[in-house]
Length: 318
Image 1 (cartoon, rainbow, N blue to C red):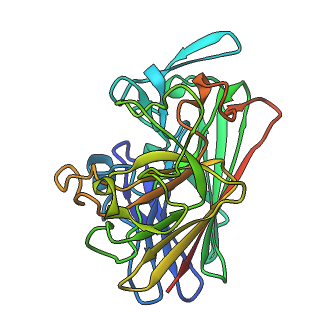
Image 2 (image 1 turned 60 degrees about the vertical axis):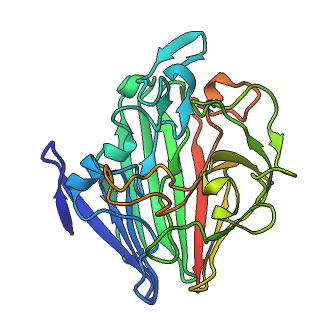
């Protein structure tokens, strides 16, 4: 179904997945999850009504972020002896793929039906400063068990770096703010950051005894005024869970990725975007920020002949 047109004139389509209870709207712009309507009609993700809004008023709402989700320090990294300079679009650093990341590209849809849709985007060598032509596909599948499964796949024709994630903001109440949401993250360590949100030198820091400990359920707003924007090092098979006490709705997240960026939407201002502070929270499953400059972190390098394969699943209840 036609949703609108990009500034380039390219068509933007909307695909709807349904299992008879949940309906999910997916855009070919940015492979965006525009809506997740539960059985009672409540939409639990922040979305925008027009293509123009996504270009003018979005903070990556629902988008597939790449080539590199999160930050690369100074927008620079060295790979196989060559140094690459990326756009420095966030306080001197490169954020979420640069000035025109995957969130602002038109993806090609195929095989769309009521349960699944596959979207593909080919990023040319040199786009936003990254080496290699990268072909990325994402498959969104809505299961009988009320799960939204996101399957990522990518291949390259030259060595490059890659960190794909989805940037949906969730609000299980459907409105208001998320400081009353109760969160559990099975992660014993997190990455402290400097003022530019670049991980500090040294090993990940234990969460025990700190305001960053979500190994036991805690309300978003109970500590630090609910202001979180940090990467957590997940336990192997670690699960994330969000509960909204008033409605009883819950969401459980699992992933094959080693980390998750927990962001509580406190930088939304209600002016540049239609949503105010804490209107939604993000659980961006991914590798770690600035990994191309941190050999001590899990590698984000992808080489010809290799396949990047990753899966994240959101299960809804209540």
